[in-house]
Image (cartoon, rainbow, N blue to C red; front, side, top):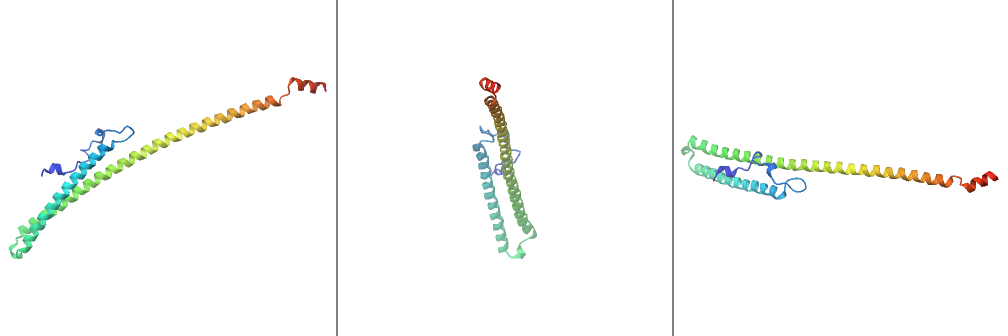
Length: 167
């Protein structure tokens, strides 16, 4: 097995800017799913390798415990312990790294969604403000027009002025 193929891509290897963009914001779902499938596949291979190494360590431990304690040298005990420790440490590092990458991706997506919600809120707020201003202008125009009509209706006409003047 080639060790390079077993390691999931690091954050530096995933170039998000190079991933295809969707028509409306964000990265195309297919591209993200492809990256996630690669990560999942690599993690599965790492888990299989870790299980194989753990099985080998268990086998070595079984072989050694079947031998009388006097026949097991300190060197053999150290070798088994070293293999077990190295396997556990490597698995822990890989698990931390893959978890970190997943969390960073989730945070990035969450930040992008928040930014989009903020932009949508600003657009909606601007549209609402514009509509309120338009309605205010319409109300002012209607008030002015109604005053003009009322002034015209309540103003004395020529016939009424003559009646008031001759009376």
